[in-house]
Every structure is written in structure tokens, then in C-alpha cells.
Length: 335
Image (cartoon, rainbow, N blue to C red; front, top):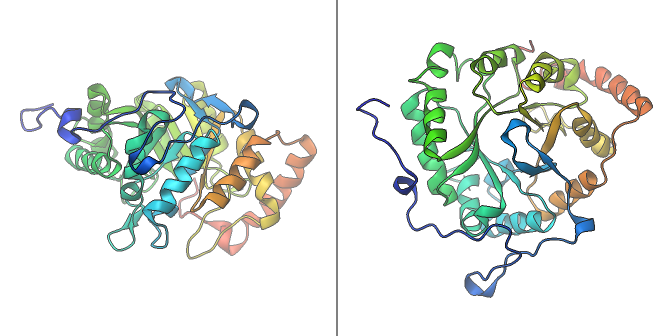
């Protein structure tokens, strides 16, 4: 770091954050509430090792973007997070831009509960700032909102977006986002560095070239395997490097196009993502306990696709991939 960038410690971010003992089954909370006890062994979701990070995480991750919706309250978020722990789900994925000042930010709604359960979750956030200073600003903001002094993983958010991360020499250099994340990792503010993305798979080879990315999270489902195809274009190389691989958009997505999986393909969509070679977990966005429980039941009952099932699903995915709503579902380029 240069003289203009003072060393930033955890204490600079959050003071007086109390933490719970790791592995604690239950602890007293304000108002007499208690943390959920660990579920019975037969009800626990399976865990897997997140690539070379060595971290053991649940095969289902809670996608926290819906927490930024106006109708989702802080108490609603608390119920989802505590129920997730009851079910053995420890992977939480959020970002600074999930929500807004009017609707409330996902990170802010999560903060009161995260403060209580911090040592029991694998906490993930993101940054879409290309510069060193901008990335540190976002990190400070996320830590404050989440009421913690550390993050387990921070992604370069949608790295395939050239408008956001156009100058690769800057972004991946000492004065760019990767330089900031490298320093944050050195200081213990974050544990691991990742890159997420929905489009432009070939751009991800630039971050793989650095050797400093621990985890990739990409749009992977049985439809876009025929278009973006991160599975073959990027993940085959990432596996050789030992990276942790996280599937997102496994149920399609939401937005103006409304590209969603056919309702009857819910289970198969999750099974496809979890059957991809080397994948550790699938992140599914949930806004309430019912959606969480459905995803958890499906993942707990996971079995790999049979060759016949895989063939039938690939055929349907190919047909859907050519429709207007799916043709470039997450933007261009597809390559």
C-alpha cells in the first residue's frame, strides 16, 4: 500500500461486535429468543468442500437478493436466516446493490441477525467497483451494514460486464479492485476472493490467469448451457486450478423478460446444477421460509441425473435456449 492508503484493520470497520462460540447449539438472545439448535443428523443438508478454500459449506446457498424487496422486512429476513441454520444451510450470498434506500438493502436487513450468528455462517458479498479506493469503500459499507468485522468471500460482481470492469489492466492491477481485495485478504478482512458473472465467459480467463481467484460463481442451468456454457468454456479450466465452483441462476432468473424455468422442472433444474462436475453448491434466491424449505428439501434429496434424464433435459434446454426470452437471457456477448 502507498502512503496515501493507510492500513485498515478490522477494528477500523466495526467496534464492539460480539461473536458467538463456533458450533454453539443455542445461545440466549435479547428478548429471550434463542438461536436454533443444530438439526438432527438425518435432517442436515449435505456439506461439501469449496475447492481450494477448504471451507465446508452447504450444497444449498441462500441467495439474499430478494431480501432487498420492499415487502421483505428485517423480521422476515431473520426468520429465513434462522430457519436456514436449522436446516443446515450455512452459505449466504448477498451484495451491496441488492435493494435500495427506499426498499431497504439486503445487507442492512441481514445485519441484526448476522451479528448474532456470524460464526455459524459462510458470508459472501460482492463489489462492482473497478478501483482500489472504490473497492475499499464498498467493503467498509458492507461490513457496517452486515454488522461484522469480516467477510468469508467477496466476488468481483458480474466480471463479464465490460462497462463495469472495462479496463482489465486497472481492475487486476495493484491500483484496482483485485489489488484491494488482495490487501483485504492479507489483513484478514476477507478470507477468499471470487468472481461472479452471467455473461461473456471468455473474459473470466483473465481473472483465472492471475492465480488469485479462489471461487467462481456463474450462471449455470440446463438452458443456458447451450448459450453461455460456463460449464465448458470456463469451469473446465477452473477445476484444474482447484477453484470452488458455485452455480447461480439455476432456476432461470427474474427481470423484465421473466425468464423462469417451467414450474414442473424445478427439481430437475436443481439436480442439473448439482450434477455438473466439480460444482460445490447451488445458490437459490429466497424471499421467505416456504421458498427456503422447498429448495432445502430438493437439495437434501438430491440424486445425480441418470443418462436418460440428462439427455431429455438437454433436449428441452436446447429448445428453450432459442426462444426470445432465453436467447440472450443475461445479456451479450454469449462468448
